[in-house]
Image (cartoon, rainbow, N blue to C red; front, side):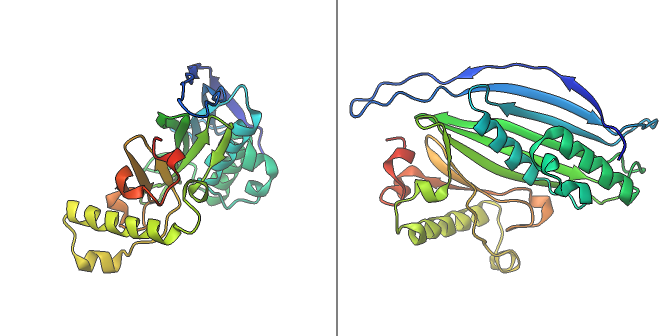
Length: 259
């Protein structure tokens, strides 16, 4: 395995959640501080004009190594690799380890460079929503190997409850036993989306709705997001279905309905 060359750009943006007062059962929010993290990894010993590279534009949590590890783990998992080195623990938990595994796969596939451009991987994390002591991050990845028709993007929400300093998922946000009711709302949102993009029953039959637990609880609505090929062809991108808060009352816990 060749040694990895790393170029790192230091960037810092501090986002400190403010404390809010509540009329009933006041809770002191967990101090979520995020630090912007920008890193660039370039394939070693590359003398080409366009070299295989990995760009990381993510976040870390100076006050919570647990959240920092979880973000890295989730973001790397969004961009799976097939090389043997990708199974190493460092490749699944560190940017440098993932970069090594990516460059290893590029070399094994002979995908260092082509007329279509150099192989590249992008790992990004940005704030998607922030209200009621709920911080929602959007994680995005993109992996392209030279010679492919196109790269493969992937997306996932990471929701953090600032009151506990822990991540929450769809199962935590729904009232117990109301999963089926939530899926009905997703089906209705899917039909609205089909109407908006002016697609008919034939499109829906070829690209049926699949279940997604990738949900962002925003201040005025919930967003259910899908990856490419989940419910639509690549050209459509990553569809977002929207569910208004009013429809979720009695289905989702009040904590996640801006209450």
